[in-house]
Length: 216
Image 1 (cartoon, one colour):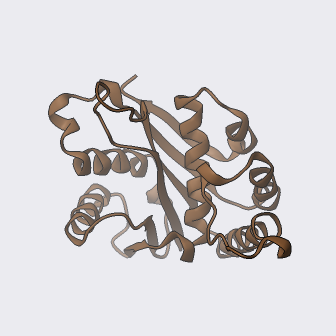
Image 2 (cartoon, rainbow, N blue to C red):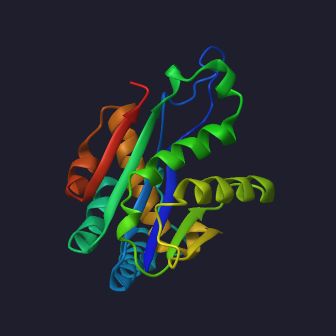
């Protein structure tokens, strides 16, 4: 079975005149076919929350999940040391938002789905055996979820063996350690483009199987 955890970093705002949106938008998929890797993910997230973010002396207000924007470099290094030897790959595509046509900028769901599909297209599904489960951080309404699922399903037809099932889960990231790690990795890739900050990215670079800039 394959588990794919999809998260994003940046925003899909396009008003660069009156507001201050991000210049880039990254969608990242953390992929593994190893059940034991999911155990590693769960253990790493749990330990980091317990030992680094919610130590006993600071447990008045518990943090429930890891987020790239709220996790210090020390905490990221702590996570990395626990997951560095596990078997997984990272696939990401980063959109240069300033190059998006104005007509498309108004259709944010369409842009999101398109970028997500481009990431999915980079994953070698022809090698998949057993089911493929795509877990997405839930941020959409029911109609947008249905459109996303249908769009990705159509994109994968012909690439996945008919005997391989494709399942979608749009869930709370607190319940999925893999999603929390995908958020950390997405943030690192996004920062590389947005701020030219490679510090976190350089730690996990060896796991990155695809890192492309769309609309250079």
